[in-house]
Image (cartoon, rainbow, N blue to C red; front, side, top):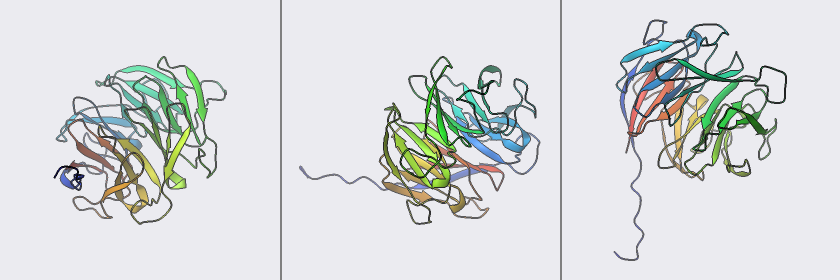
Length: 294
């Protein structure tokens, strides 16, 4: 009827499939922490204790792997939350090597972000990264309780944040995401909240508190933005994924503790592909799970 608002259809999520089991052979995992999807719908998983990246197609078929334990170029030590950029370059933060390595989809090294010296932008366990449409890189720096920023040329350009519980402060941030409009969302893990900033780093909004009700978190471990600007948050110790609009309005949650289809044991990361499928790094169950959102 004219003049009446049309209600949005409620969201629903359907389990599609899972893959992986404990081990170190191709397709097996030892602490899968990070996950991302490139624009050809390939899935990359940071297999943290195996110190490697594994690449799969969208159906979970193993394609290739790269990395080994070490600190030389191309080697990895505890790779964390991954990011696939518009050009399909794969950004890999390393928790124990205090650097970001960047690879092409074949696993070939391209460049590195690292401190090298003891300057103000020294990483201390970088945990997550996102690249905006302008090419700027935003890094969740876990032990420095900050977001570090590099320009599109890889030059350090500043940071914001310090340890604390007030607006704009962090308590072990673990991940970051950038929306299409350039707003930055930070998984402020142990403050159990998501913080939202504009493209200049001005604090805009936050939501969440410690708890288990919808909209509460028990370690907000990872954040992802889809093409509709919906915000996906990994709620680590509540063994679930929560979905919000970009102002923090709760939309949906899915998952519970367990090892059945659609259940999680301490999930650590979420990725949403161009086709709308959701991929979860199910850390405790040492597998990847795939879902469809409607």
